Every structure is written in C-alpha cells, then in structure tokens.
Image (tube, rainbow, N blue to C red; front, side):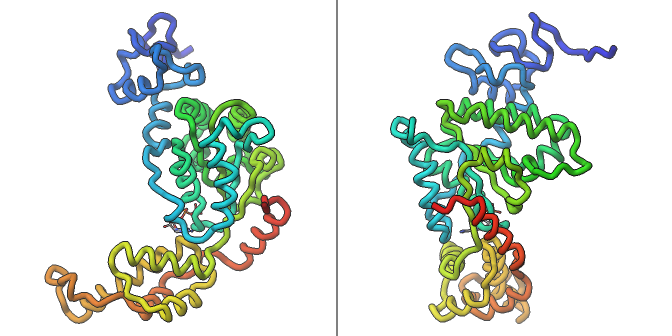
Length: 352
Ligand code: ADP
C-alpha cells in the first residue's frame, strides 16, 4: 500500500485540520490558509465541528473564492421584477433580519428557487438579498462542482455549508442548480455525481428546520429538469421573467446616466423599447454597450486618431446608434423557451 509522505503529529491526519489550530499541526499551513482558518475559529481557538476533518485548502477556497465579501447590489439596481422583490422581501429578508419574530408558524422556508431565462437578474436578486439582509453571500455554480471539482465536489459542498454556518446569516446561491439536482438519470450519471447530489440534499436537510440563519437560493434556466426531491426542498419558486418595456427603458437610462451619456428623448426611449421586445436584462446591457460605441466609431471613421480624440467633442449616443447595435446584439431567448417557463410556473411556481 502506498502511504503518502505526510507529517504526522499527535494523531492528526496530515493534510486534515485538527480541531485546535494553534499548535504543532498548523506549522505546515501557508500563512494565508492559516489566517483564513483562524478567522473561522471560535473564541476558544477551536474550529467548529462542521469544519473539522476538512482539508484546509477547501476551506480556504470557500472563504476566498466562493464567499463574496461585498456583493454590492441593492434593490434599486434591479429593474422591474416588482413581484419578485415583494415576495422575496417578505419571504426571506424579513425573516433574516428578525429571526425572533419569524419562528414557529412564521418560520420561513430555507430554500428559494429563482427560475427563468438567462440574464434576467437572478444572480442580482441573490446578491441584493444578501445585501439587504446584511448576510454573507456565497456564490457557486453547480456545474463547476461536477466539472472543475471532479471527485472533490462532496467535500467542497461540506466545506461550503460548514463555512456558511460560521458566517450566519448567510445566503448560499447555487447557479445552474439543475445540473446538481437534475431528475435525469442519464447514462452518464456516475456514482460520484449521485453522491454529490445526496451530500447536497443532506446538507440542506441539516439546516432546514433548525435555528440556523442560512438561506439556500437555487437559480436555473431549466426548472423542468429538477426532480421532486429538489422541488420539495426549494419551497418557494419564483419566476423571473424577461424585463417589461418599462424595465428595459430603465436599464437604458440607468446605464447611460451613470456614464453621463444620457441625451435620448422620451420618444427615442419608447422607440428603443418597442424594438427590444424579447431582450433580456443582460441583452439590454450588451445593447447599451454596443450603442455607446457609436459616437466613438463615427469619430474614428472621420479620421480622428484615438489618441487625439477629445471626450468633449464626441457626440451623444442616439437612437440610430441603438438601431445599429440591434443588428449586432440579438435577443438570446426564444419565444418557445418562454412558454416552457410559463407552463412550469403555473404548475410549480409560487404565485403569491
Ligand atoms: P441571471 O442570473 O438571471 O442569468 P444576472 O443577474 O447575472 O442574470 O444578470 C446579468 C447582467 O444583466 C447583470 O449584471 C445586469 O447587468 C443585467 N441585468 C439582468 N437583469 C437585470 C435587471 N432586472 N435589472 C438590471 N440589470 C439587469
């Protein structure tokens, strides 16, 4: 049998962390890892139970890469979606802010599903929830668990929930949750992905019903792929649709105003909104970016060198710039897809 050449000290299993980090066992840890582990220890210097026997590098990865120290999105940054904002405020923000009121009959669900086309603000909502509820935000894409962390996904999931429980209140946002909790038993469903799924459900079960202040948000563009067990745990399911015409106008105005480039008339805005039916929020952002290049491209076409171009000489962004940009930036969601979401929403969505 091959025995890995690891340091052995006082029963410590080499690359595992012993409960007490101050001591001989952590000499081998790099400074950054040690700091990160120390921050998770209680006042007694002990690492919480859930994090024991996990590899330090996984805990460090969760703390540095998955935990977002400054999600930096507020409700006011999100266009439209009034219905979702109202539901989320009542269902998850208030309970996170006032756990003393929201217990017993009022105890909130711990799992929220945001579903709908890509680029409609699901991740923004997750970040805004964390911001508004003063919670720590953790973001992980479920597909990275199966692709990047092959064979280690389970351990990473344990580390994720473990660190979150030390950083309460916490919001864990799992993007593309369908790839983790899919009902499809494809031939490719390996033993490892089945185990990963089981571990994930166990972790969810662990904080559901307890006193933990942890909210799990799953996001998906393919809600129909979720199985019954996943639906049961994600008790609230909110449809995040494409932006309305008003929301699209808001995105255009907001992005251009931020850069001091907004000079469009009300008529221009109405025309742009008419032409962008079916665009997602993310499509609108790409459109604004492309349109705002219009004045620059025109100046260069006129032979002005980029190094000599003066900002104050550039013309404003016009409706025509948007019309040109629309040839480049097309809507990324098809009408067919929309009817699938609407149907699923009727069947499983929280219509509150
Ligand atoms: P999703 O998670 O639904 O795929 P995101 O929340 O990541 O989409 O949105 C991607 C980008 O698109 C955001 O960073 C933002 O710039 C823009 N966007 C999407 N929806 C909205 C919205 N409702 N309001 C403002 N910006 C939006």
